[in-house]
Length: 114
Length: 115
Image 1 (tube, one colour):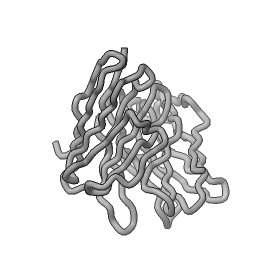
Image 2 (cartoon, each protein chain N blue to C red):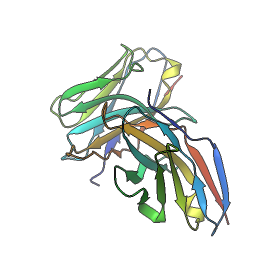
Image 3 (spheres, rainbow over the protein chains, first blue to last red):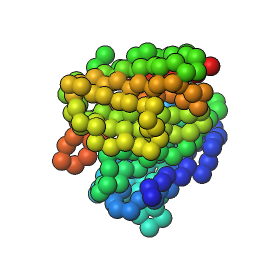
Image 4 (cartoon, rainbow over the protein chains, first blue to last red):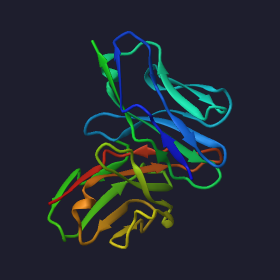
């Protein structure tokens, strides 16, 4: 069965410091991997995706993510956090072979303190 | 605004009542998805359409739930005989199928509260 795990309910960082939000996945075939961000009372906004190719993917607002097949991970990173990055972040996976639906993790709340 | 829109944004109803939500996808998108998100959880897939055909339904979609996309454009999600456990945010997403992948764009959601 497909699944996504986000082991941290919350990540706290100081503004200007690097941040990492962790994600691991399980699929039967090759994965499509996504990160979305959710601000209060708003829908999910797409940040970045991994389909194939370079393991380091760059996305919106200075975020990037690294695909690691051996560790089945897709951690979200940013070199220098902003207070405005504070939000709820979701990792999602789609199994290329079986379905178009996205399987989401439970989310990680990122809190960037000034 | 050319994004995915959903109506209403909020709905409060009494247990046992029927409710219907509407989703208008991005105009050229041929795939439309419904997800449900409860507090503290990630969105869970409910169903999806390609054009007007409903191609996949989750086991979460009990027989009290029905979704339609009659002309391959907007979609409705109806919940009959609502229960308190139906309280959640209902998210709609749309995508344009390509040979490689389809990126899903989400609407703002409809928050349902069942009293």
